[in-house]
Amino acid sequence: MSEPATTPATSLVDLGIKACTAYGREDLAARLGRIRTGLADPAVHIVVAGEFKQGKSSLINALLGTAVCPVDDDVATAVPTFVRHGEEKTATLVYDGNPPRREQVEFADLRGHVVEGSALGARPARVDVTVPRKILAGGLVMVDTPGVGGLGSAHAAAGLAAISVADAVVFVTDAAQELTRSEVEFLRQAHELCPTVVCALTKIDFYPAWRRIRDLNAGHLRMVGDLPLMPVSSPLRARAVRANDQKLNVESGFPDLVKFVQERVGGGAAARRSADAGAEVLAVCDQLTGQFSAERDALANPANAQRIVDDLNTAKRQVEELKTAAARWSVTLNDGTADLTADVDFDLRDRIRKITTEADDAIDEVDPADMWPEMEEWLRARISYDLLGNYTFLRRRAAELSEQVAGHFHEASGKAVGMLKVYNPTPLVEERAVEHRIELAKMTAGKQVMVALKSAYGGALMFTMLGSLMGVALGPIGIGIGVVMGHRGLKDEKKRQLEKRRAQGKNAMRRYCDEISFVSGKDSRDTVRRVQRQLRDHYTRLAEELNRSTATALAAATDTAKRSQADRQKRLKDLDAELTRLGQLRDRATKLAQA
Image (cartoon, rainbow, N blue to C red; front, side, top):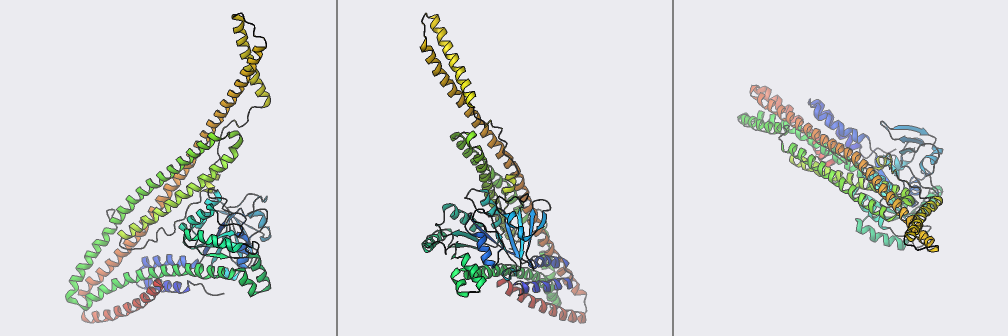
């Protein structure tokens, strides 16, 4: 097995930790230790998304060269499946909870848990699968997702939530037709959440006109962001793997996709992590170098010692100001958090208001007794999608706030928030029922007859009595009048009941939207507060590190006046040796950060 691509970065961070420990800077060692923990987990997530029955599971199986994800002509994947490297094939069901409950099952029984219509108990939130495949050994994790199911579906919301924390996306569409409007819109949003996206055109062995579809799709992808398009055939790839046929493998189109996965995705993610690690080691080296350089300057130039001490005192006061609540970065963080909370809340209320208006208009056009189940499904899907948009808005604004705070802190770190995960609203929506309280049963035939007879009898009696008072015998005319009055009465009663059902439907929609708005609003405010605490703790920690570096340098520079000439020369040699070692470490960190 080849060594991970992050091995050089890990070795460099280990050297940095060793140096910090030797110099008594446990705070800086702890900072690099957090980077070391991230490098130890080389997982690179590739989300495979697309509409139902487009060949996502088949593509993963063909890419890995083994049957992992269940494939069926009639049913589709209903549970996200995470496929990673392992010494043997295993399958573990993961259920929602705090902490999540995990249940290992036989790999052969996997199909019964991940496809639609399975009857093997409660459906898990996801399934973790391990297989001994070389392509996954470097930390790649393939994620098979349920079909998108249209732009406004709950599946689309869940898929985009998964994409928000992915390193790359493989969007799958088959060669039966060109990309639909909802697919293009999904791709546009996916590209905003994850910059590395490729479109795989499947089933080219089944549709002779796939080249025309390829050209049409290429035009659509240029409008999204000039995304790469790769025509592939999963059956040809599977046959090529079984027969070890290189020519057939090239014909399947998979070599380009494998190269994309291994080099651009896997290598790109490792390069980004390595560069971030190099930047952290470089920042630590700068603090240590500054600490030693000030002492060396004071030793080498005794006449300038006081000026150096004065400069360090000024620097110490500036650093101490960074730790106060009046510091510009702290004010920016507090004001930005308040603005972010208000803007996110307004965005959520605006989305819910539009949903309520659309629901009212839709209910006015139909009879809830006929369409209520479909209305509930539409409401859940629409709210899931709009909540996702609200959390995406929160994520983007939080990243902007992080950059502003970093700029005001004069240290472009931006690592506190990182890739803020987009919350998946689907479970929140599904766990709350739409309590409609609507009398969905229409009048039975017997009830309609009774209403009609009641109106007919009343009408006939009224006109008969009126005729008697006027001395006119209506006879059969009174019966006709009764029939007309009965029909009119039945029609009015039906209209009254329909309006009643519509009013009840609108009230049910509003109660449900209010409940979702209340719960989601609380969650988004908690998320904003969590971001604020992350940023506050991150930059407070940096301020404390700078303060300690400055204080140490100031103490060393002040003590130079107390040293004898012999002590000064000895200390100068020690400092030169330390600065040389730090310079070498800094050079390695610079190369890694700029790679």
